Image 1 (cartoon, one colour):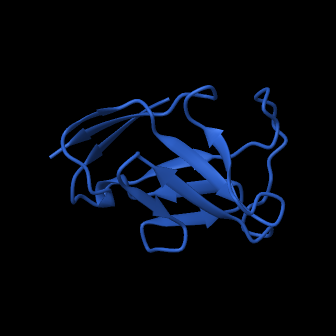
Image 2 (cartoon, rainbow, N blue to C red):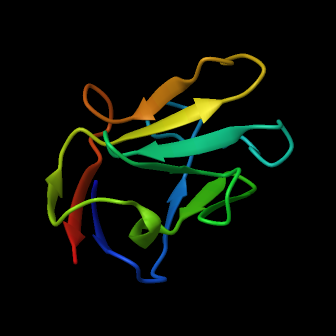
Image 3 (tube, rainbow, N blue to C red):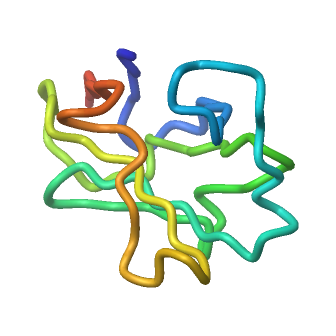
Length: 106
């Protein structure tokens, strides 16, 4: 998955979170599970505790322009799920998973 963001812009990206790692249609309702989801780009992160990310059902919408990054490609990005089962966080997308690459422009 390749995402594109522009620093300081309001553009958003919505990502469906599946509980089936093989790509099935077994979705989890994150809004009912008390989950927090974070988009981490190594030196900057945004999460659903802020106005820059929102959970609706099984989808997470990120306002990636809020990341504090310089222009470039960020292949080490991760999406991390926190809930009662994963209090320290579980990487659900990133290196070794469905790859998330962020192309960031100023």
